[in-house]
Length: 237
Image (cartoon, rainbow, N blue to C red; front, side, top):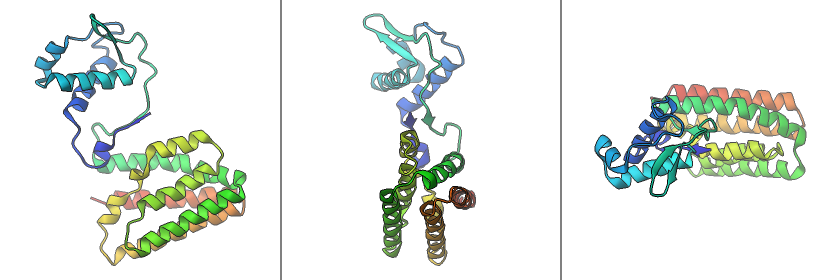
């Protein structure tokens, strides 16, 4: 799995990423058939108007994706089987806002299940971790911080309680940047504390349901929490 954070953070992609994206699209559209040889490095330099270093970085990215392979002395060839592509959290063609909304929708479907499983499978140690994450989030808010890392730590503690390593790995892959921090930054200083207070209450409701072993209640509390996150992000410019 690969994550492209450039768009999520509002940054322009590197030249090599732009070249890689164009070549990736050509390969996926069949303009370069499986087994076909790509143009030489010199030809690609001329085609894209970039340096050899940029082309080499782009080819390296395609190789990591399993799209091309290099034969020493012969050149770069499209792999015979390009069906097994890594999952990429990138936002080609998306605005930062759309990217965040779609990432939140992904979280919504995954984390509702996480909360439900956590309520069934949690251990006393899991409950301690979840409650510790709540306390750290509260402390961050008292210090005047947004607390997005502490927010993410709470969700990660819930994921750990599922006892499902894939759930944990996927959430780690998404990372704390999916917390809608930009929307919070745009709130005025009077609105932000009330929003943070509601976040802690929503997290507490999730935690209490998990602690009580209430799978349906935990799922509903998580669903309500993330739906509101979607609404907040949608209201951000």
